[in-house]
Length: 237
Image (cartoon, rainbow, N blue to C red; front, side, top):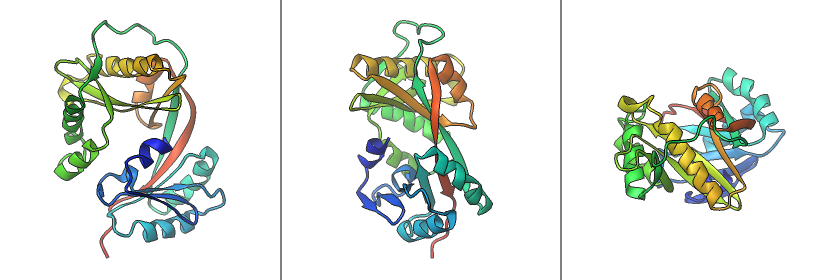
């Protein structure tokens, strides 16, 4: 997860309480303009002040921690301060899916086709009116898988590194949902990671949202969680 984020950052900087990912070239992609909190004793007040300092050029403040206990401790502090708090599940593929995918239902596709599908999906999201945000997110696309491969309704990304595979950003176009496309695309990406030698394949998903149920049916089980703290909007000063 650290490699996936830092790999597209303009700059990675140590801070008093962790590591800052700073990417002025993609200012609307909050994922690569965030501070990863690594100080187990930091308070929400200290971290908020650090975010104001490090992220002063951006219209948001974002902090993440991969330490589950630290995140659970900070969550009520940030919620009380008016921040958005997200618990993000880490789900590891540990079992076969509840049923085998249809042959040919999904496959790896070209970066252009995968990026176009995810861009169409992103335009349906709350930030979708921001064309620049959609364009900047497309810069992060890596290996793409889609279903159906010739006329995608759903796409997802696959990152691999050092024996680990991560299936990320599963997006299905609203008009074509509930037809098994996400199931097929995720299964194809996970199978490809395993075929490439990845000993473990995982996904992350919002603990408060429904996709986790689909991922469980595909053989993914929760093994832990991370936390994200987001403040929007931040007026320019």
